Figure 1 (cartoon, rainbow, N blue to C red):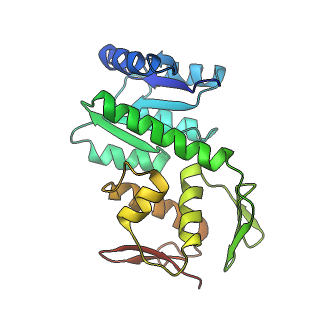
Figure 2 (cartoon, rainbow, N blue to C red):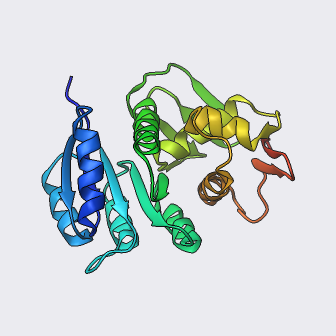
Length: 230
């Protein structure tokens, strides 16, 4: 079995070395870059399974790099942030990042996040699930990982696909934030409500006629969300 290839991008050599050493000793194949432009050159020339990307970098920062990667790939992206960079974190999620680590972080937290995003990506892209889901105008082909609204195909990232399937499979049930996070993101999660807020927003933009007045993904204030058929 070929171990996952990880691209680590940070202008701080100490961070690059720390992440590279702790991933390589566990069998990962690791490439490193010190800024976004160098990262894109590597990404376009190698098969990368995961990108770990700092936000604050010279030449091409993490937000710009995330946006450029998302134009061509759904590869999982973990962003690295410093304390107090809440606005940048939300912006990175809006651009398509999958997870984040706040500096300083330990080996255990690093490995947990890496394993979680790779697990989610492989579940969506590699697991064959027979059958279909069909509620209202939304049709999901579980085997092909395809989503259609009426006669229009909708492109979803692996996490967006996982989230939509989980909501549809539990149609009519009020699902708490923690329940959704642990079933879609993994058992390591539970309090990362900003993940849900951003990804629910992404889904609404793609499947709702009027995202500001959603009919499918309905907010249950103080509890969570419920998938309903208009």
